[in-house]
Length: 162
Image (cartoon, rainbow, N blue to C red; front, top):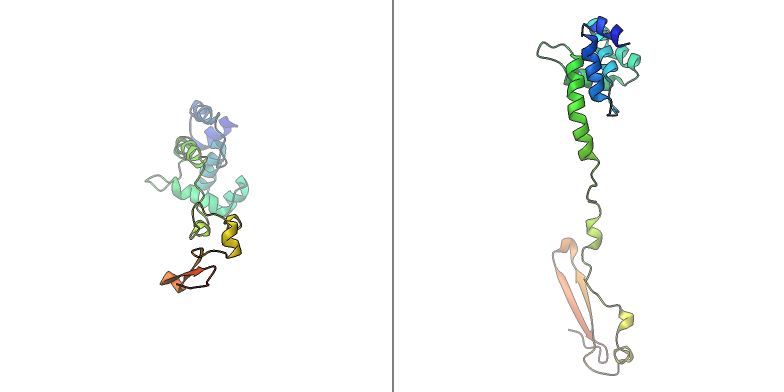
């Protein structure tokens, strides 16, 4: 197969073999060297991007991006250069992509929570029975758009409100 491609595209078979050896230990979800050479060959024979996409089994936009990313200064697609670039670039990209990422969502769920708060069920029984002065309940009311706030203090025995 490499001999056929090398004859059509015009590269030495050993050069193609070298490229394949470089990529042998890497898995590509993108294009293989063979697919890139097929693109180059079909482009040189004036096939449309749509026809090329159908032939290699990729989407039309995928083929279009591949061609535009790997055009040489002459405006021609170079399969060897494209594959060499992919072999060098994508493994580093994939290694970075596999790192765990910090969860960013729903930070507002913890906003306004009191740190180390004590449950109301754990208050002293004397405060629960309203037997002594000085046991206060407090509450806060926050205004619209957090523009204002009211703090209320109520003595449990006398119901005196501050």
